[in-house]
Structures are given as structure tokens and as C-alpha cells.
Amino acid sequence: MIKEWFVEKFVTPLCHYYTLESTLVYGLILVLATVWIYRLLKRLKVKIDKNFFLALLLFIIYGGWTRALRDHFLGIYENQWWWCSPPIYVVIFLITISLLLAGIFLEKYFKVPYHKFMIISGSLLLLYNLSLTRITNLLAVTIVLSLVAFWFLAFFGYHKLFPKKLSFINAGILIAHLFDASSTFTAVSFFGYYEQHVLPGFLISIFGPWIMFPLKIAVVWTVLYLLDKNIMDIQMKNFLKIVILILGLALGIRDFLTIAMI
Image (tube, rainbow, N blue to C red; front, side, top):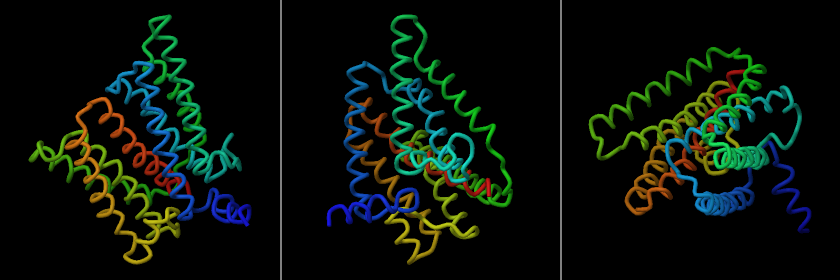
């Protein structure tokens, strides 16, 4: 019975959709992994600052981009289950943490800034992905980028008018999540895709794909507000904001490129 339950809830949905049970388990793993990574960074005395963000940014892009290429079975990602969700998050994490440790070693013994080593490494990975990528669905690209441009103007405009209510960083994180919402809205509304995650899928089935926009705004803005209000440790706050950014930007890139390469 346990084996059949595990297969039904975790194995069969792999690469296709999430169940409630798998969502809860993966969410718990994410929380535990976040705590462990933060403690590891503190032990390694890595500052969670602009350089750390720049070191991770290309790997965030690489994760979402690679997931999209796997959807189209291209290059080394062809028909390999570990490049789909959620195993890909483990693969990308192992690649990133390995290169981060290598970068810290180079900085300590050879005075090479770790973030520069990571940027070079990430650029090489993205160049390989670029060699496989063919954008063919210009309609999808136009729709998504038009929606993102609207949200960009809306939230950075709000930041300019009310900087104390919405910081520049928080505006950027919100736009990353609305990039994901825009890509999901476009994919589901116009190109026959479906939402794999449990709660968004349930809400879309009731209200339609447009619900992704108020859902993202309400949830992400609230979480960012609570972080700014309750967490005084700037290192922890920065780290948690990067985690929130990853959850929006990586998925947005995956969804966008998946429909752009139809």
C-alpha cells in the first residue's frame, strides 16, 4: 500500500504535474534546504550582498532555461528525467554549490573574486543553452513581453512615487513573479498548456488564468512586507529575498521559453 501510494503521488506525476502530497513534501524540503544553505553560507563567511546576487543570477536563469530545453528534448537534456521538475532543482543546486565552493577556494588561495568565477562559469553554461535555443513563437513572445512591460512600468512607477512603501528591490522581485504570471497566463490562455502546481491550478480552474496576477501580487507583496517589518538581520533578509526571487524568475524563464520555442 505504501509503495503504491508513493508511486501514485510522487513517481507517476514526475515531470508532468504536482499532487497535494508532493507539494507539501517538496515545500518542506525547500524550507529545510533554505535553512541549511543559509547556515553554510554563514560558516563560509559569504556576504549576502550584490556580489552574491550577481554570482547566483546566471544560475537562476540557467535553471529555468534548462527546464524549458528539457521540455523540447534538446541537447544533453534530451529525455533525461533529472532535468525536469522537481529533480532539476537538485541538479542545479549541486552545480551551483559546487562552483560556489570552487570560487571561494580560488578567492582564498589565488585572490580571484568568487563572484567573477561564478559569472564566467554561468556564462559558459548559458552559451551552451543559447546554441540550442530557437525562438519560433513570436506571438507568445510579444504577449508576454507586453504584459511584463506593463507591470514593469506599474511597479517601478509606484516605487518612484512611493519609495517608502515599495523599495526598488521589492519592485524587482514583484516584477519577476509577474513575469512568471504573465508567462503562465499566456501559455494557458492561448496555447493549450495547463498549470502543474496544485493551488494555482485549482484557482485557475475556478477563475481563469488571469487570477495569477492578483494571486502573485497579494502573496509576494505580503511576504516581502512581513520580511521587511519583522527581520532585522540584513543578511538573512537578503538571502530570503533571493530565495523568493528564484521562485519567480526561474519559473518565469522556464514558462516563457517553453512557449517561445513551440
